Every structure is written in structure tokens, then in C-alpha cells.
Image 1 (spheres, rainbow, N blue to C red):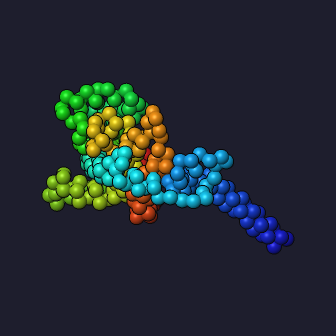
Image 2: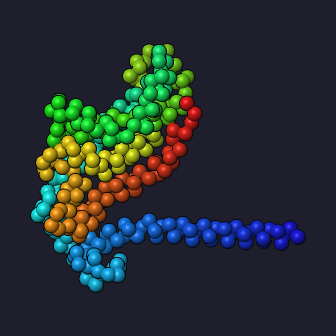
Image 3: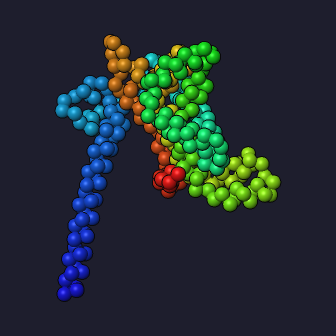
Length: 285
């Protein structure tokens, strides 16, 4: 009887696992098909892209879209690609500096009005960016930051999300370590640098990836601040390939394929570290 029950449960588990794998495989196809279409479409001419019925493969492939894009025929792609890298790295640096220092202050220091300030900080997450867009533009314009890298990176780096995210992680750092360091005569900055940051590497890695992706794909704020094609980022440049008279779909797909490469490389390099810290920030405050 026990053998029959065991076989029943084993067979049931196999069926459940098979259904689960088929479901996940279906999701992979649904999610991966647009990405595959982007790559194959970048090697097609416009008339092949709009051929009916729509097909993933083509009768013939061409590299003309990449040649025209990289030659700078319509947009300075290499310059804009470099602009995106510079702005994204700047935003990661400033975001990490602000988020770690503010998060450390809320996590490990006691001061008057701390809870009220924390509630206010969290409440700002509910304010849409579009509401602060005009005053932020006026401030950026008044201090002469239009059409500059820091004019895009610094305002976008000051967000409540990063501070709250780092605060939640830093709450888990044992206060005994900090007290011991203070007894040994370490300064607050040294404690932050030697204890706080090393024990928050996982959270810093996750936040770095999130900030980089947000900055790399952002188009609204850079579009408002940057004025010349030589200063624009890649998303804006690719958007400019769509105009009143003609839309360069092949070049847009080629550009989208190229700008996906840095994101893929970053994920491949840091996937173990990032996936191992996805639950960061889930502890109670």
C-alpha cells in the first residue's frame, strides 16, 4: 500500500513539474520573441520588416542598418552612446553616495524628528515625477546646468527610493560593531566607510543596477535638459530617427540591439551577486 502511495505522489509531482516547465517555457517564448524580432529585424530592410504576414526570419539579410547608424549619417551614434555611458555612470555614483549616506543616517543615528522625516521621505515616493518636472527644470536652468552631463545626472540622482532602500538594508548591520568601533576611536565617517559600506555590498550592487537601467533607458528628463545632438543620449537619438516624413525602423532596431549589449553584459557579470540579494530591504524597520 505504501509503495502504491509513493508511486502516486512521485507521478503526481512529475506531472506538476512538467506542467510548470511547459508554462515557464511558454513565458520564455512570449517574452523572448520581441527581443529576437528586434535582433533579426535589425538585419532587414524596411520593406521586409512590414511584409505580411510578419515573420521572424527573412529571405535575405543586410547590414546596411548598422552601417548607416554607425557612420553617423542621421545621428552621431557613437557620441550619443558615450553620452549615455557617462550620464549613467555619473547618476550611479551620485545616487549611491546620496542613498548610502542618507540611509546610514536614518538607520544608525537617533535625532529629533527622525520618524517624521522618514515618513515625509517615504511619502515623496507617491509624488509623480511630472509634478516636479517644471520646478526642477526652472532650477536647472537658473543655475546654468542645461545641456550638461551633471544637469541630467545630479537632479535624477536625488530620489527617496535609494535612501529608503539602503536604510532598510543597513538596519540589519549589528549596532555592536559600530559601538566597538567608536570605543576604539574610529570617526563616524570611518565607521561608515569601513563597516557600513562593506556590509551593504549586496544592496549597493542591486541599487547600482536599478539606477543604471533607469538612467540608461530614461528619455524624458534628458530630452528636456539636453539641447544639441552632440550632447543627447542614445534613446533620444533613436527617437529622432522617427520624423514626419520617414521612420527608419531598421536603424531603430539596430540601435536598440546595440544599446541592449551593455545591460546584458552587466547582468551576466553580476548576476550571481544581484540574484542573491533580491530580498534586500524586506526586513522590518
